Image (cartoon, rainbow, N blue to C red; front, side, top):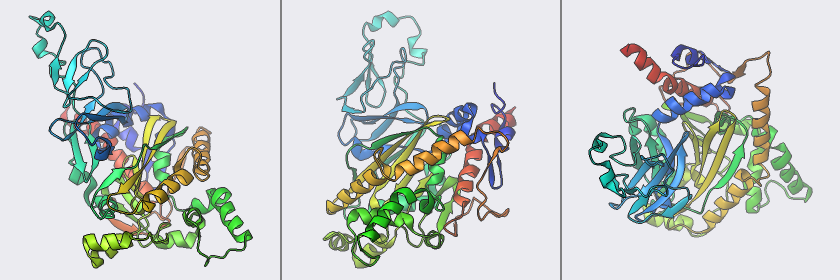
Length: 446
């Protein structure tokens, strides 16, 4: 047993105002406790319902460190099951996607299960007569996760049987998802191909924090975006000249501090928040022919304008996803160890919208989020340098104190200067609460 196990006070002591102790990022015990407490009790993104459109379609992924299967059941509903046979523990599905038909069949001993997990059949079942099998943990079949919600096509799960409701956990933060879906004239999204997958040798929280870190783009990305902008200028072009799509995407990364200060940051309770309250790096993309007309026809001119005028930059849904509503992207940061994170970057198609929008989104994803990206490597190097640097003795605390005040109340929605680190502090406020809730409740019961 380590120093943090069963010690809510020790975990809470890792966060003090605008500082976070390095153990939150580098200690393997903290990682294990995050999987046990945080990822089990928060609502965590699983997938999109368009990834499993037909009955029997399944998609394998993980919630925290738990392997799960998202599957379309025979009643048309999405189920999320632990990817484990109740017999000997064998993973039921190892393919990323597929269609299992009307049932799952374990490849080890051929136990079979309905697509809601219920036990269907066991070979030579008579061998279990008079063994009290009906009282065993295996009798019900594959276990479903504690709770599942399909919100406008996005599937979220809470592993714990009881806990905070979906509505209470997300609250008004769902407005960012609403805006992304409403950008479709049909009010629906479809996943556009498999995600780009990119391994990072760093703690998952570093990636999540970076999504609302607005003081790094003009510094860290000078080598990539800055070079592209300089080449553009050297070719004789000015800021007023029309830009090709690639330049429209990359040039805003070199916006000055004043731009990011003025665009604002909004935070919501439970660790959620977004950059780009007034404008963002996506605000000045060129119009796509036919798109505005389709939106006007679907919503009316006034509502269509309101939807498309909302240009939020990055919305973080605690604990581990970020969405970009204006370009229909979602990144999920899957923790694999204290110093290892897999990033999956998805793009979505706006149903009944011009295909040029998907092409632009795909270009952005390749340029910014791919393993072959010219921008993403800037961030990757910083994350890995930080992961290594935090092992250096002498300084034990990470500083997230920018525009901090002792009176900060993370239980209320707040809009502040776009370079504040309040959203990082907001995330750690939620982190402490979800990490310690189980322990505190157990102590009270005792």
